[in-house]
Amino acid sequence: MLNLISSGALALWLEVTGTTLPPPPEFWPLSEVSGLAFDSGIDRATETLVDTYLQGLAAGGIEPADQGIWLQAGTQILVSRRGTVPRSAASITKVATSLVALQTWALDRQFETMLSATGSIRNGVLEGDLIVTGGGDPLFVWEEAIGLAVTLDRMGVRRVTGDLIVEGRFAMNFETDLALAGRFLKQAFDARQWTPEIEAAYTRLPTRSPKPQVDVLGEVRNGNANPPTTGRWGLVRHRSLPLVSLLKQMNVHSNNVMAQQLADEMGGGVVVAERAARLAGVPPEEIQLVDGSGLNPNNRISPRAVCALFAAIQRHLTARHLNVADVFPIFGRDGGTLEDRTMPKGATVKTGTLWNVSALAGAIPTRDRGIVWFAILNGGGDYVLPFRRGQDAFLEKIVQQWGTIDPPPSLSPSFPEGRLGELDRNDILMES
Image (cartoon, rainbow, N blue to C red):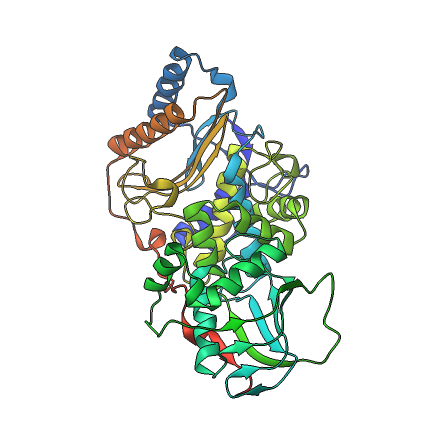
């Protein structure tokens, strides 16, 4: 029997059972870390499945010692194989970034992009510069830019005689270089410059409007390097999708740029790691991050910490009538990184991939054990596709052992999905 520390596991049990009383005597606090100790109650049948899984990897030349596995149901640790050892987890890093983002901002937090002008508007012509001030929106893409151009067009702005000045924390199409992001924006403003890719984005707008033709005659300028010297007045405030929707998109597609932008807004990978460990209730050495995306191979998270991160997210969202399925992809419903997978339907998971790492973690609903939380962190050579097939097959065996069930309300999304390019997220500040 193991005597392990996992306040995240206890939090899952409290959330599932609705218990608010102090924990039973066996859950005593330890002085070494801010966690709780409890008896694991290892499940022998699950141990057999894990051993068979690891033996299959060994038969293919993969060292079992390079694999980390953790499974729990409520407070019961079902299996731990090097579960407390931090290891490269690739994009599982985004679970930590998601948790800290949810604790940093409100669920409906929207990042603002401001449009202002240095001159007056006469007969559809802005006689001056158009200034775009970014506020850290990580999902400003073609659809959002077209919607902004439609709003300008409806305000009567057809031509800008000056430059397009881009400043602040502005990124477009996941490009953080201001010059390139500004060129994308200028192109999106004028339908006469659209490529087939932009045309396709236009067809996805929730409200079909006439194609905008806002012609910027000047150049694209970096306002951070060369700030405007003349006065300005506000035109439009663009609000991003709410935070929950941003995290869902980030995790469905495992978007590294989005994750890093959010992490940078919160102080960077090291700060995210420190806060995530504290929020999840695990020793800080079990979450060691360099970035917020998982691209850096030096990021390290233990399988136990991964489940504790999910537990903390579930606890935070449940108190607000949401759950992890609102911010992570669901197999059989969402595409993204799950498109070519074959795991049990309804599994809510996060994938992670580097050239020598394949990771899968999250929750699967079962008939006999309720929600089973798991983390499988595979490593050891260029073996990604076999790792993925093995992970999916392992989850299938788990649900065969404990029975299938439709996802319960505690593992079903309920946050209303916004759509890119919505015009009602553009607030006109001053009529032209």
